[in-house]
Image (spheres, rainbow, N blue to C red):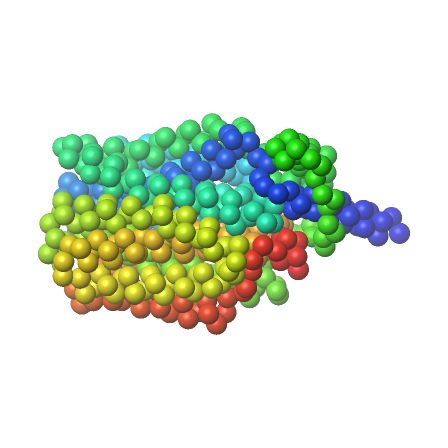
Length: 457
């Protein structure tokens, strides 16, 4: 009988803590914690764009061509997959905060080493290390924000941080324009800029551990203390007592390897949907981001012109990250993903038929908008449809293995460029996003601002 009693008591504790979290009208974390997450997104997404910005210059200095041109991007993405799943599993076992600290350290180390690369082999090896940090922190930040947020603010909080990802995306080409002209060293400064990820690493001391994770790991006192801090900060701002917590279903701890829970219904189906979405998206996104200047060059634009149009188009990244804030409260994530995928496909098709600088700019601008709409809402969707006991593993597994699409993208783009030229390559990428839209329409799960414990059922 004591086992039944203990289980009932644990169920009640978990339910009550989640209810206390979800009744909060807004986020209760400190400014330092918010800065940690925002900067982590900034540097991760800056790194993703920066290699494409620097690659034409690196290719000339290291005499890269063909498969060698794809190698630093490919090894980076392999690192992304390894880091995402490895640190995601660590987060489910040892905590979200500790895993994020290791991920930021890997990014800082990788960026530093990359700046000192001496040939194509060392560049590829150091980009692998950088990828470990980048892949881990993107999925970990999504998990952390999801679990630290009340249900009504979960999507908004994550999307606000994605705006900082958009700023990182948008900043990379302008930093490239400013630095790549420095003989021999310019690309080293562009890729070595990521060493500043040490700033959010230091700031992680202000980041609380997820109380939802703590209570599942029998650390009730610590979990309650974190929530009490949130409640105190929120109550001081609203100036009145908080409403009584509404009853919620409990989410009990799992046993064994976290990934094991994802290979059984109902989570297996959700995992397959998330994997399909991310693979199709990433083969398109990385094909575009890694080779946009190169493709535009093959369409007749000079290197400075192609980089300038890329930079101007990338202004749209932070705008695209902010756009879902207008939709998330009223529209299910599924329909936002469906619509943005279709617009993404149309924008790539526009680039394929562009014959003027204005058309190139508009197409690149629209693509950049949709990349951040898609990825931001995609991270929200992926992080909320799995149980807390395996959320970090599920998010990192979906996003990480999804990067198989990114791994093959360089080879697909280079092959397509040889067979169909740049315009045909843009049409091919548009086709991938059209298939992605169809997949989401058929198999996507409708979610809005439901409690995490409800979505976990």
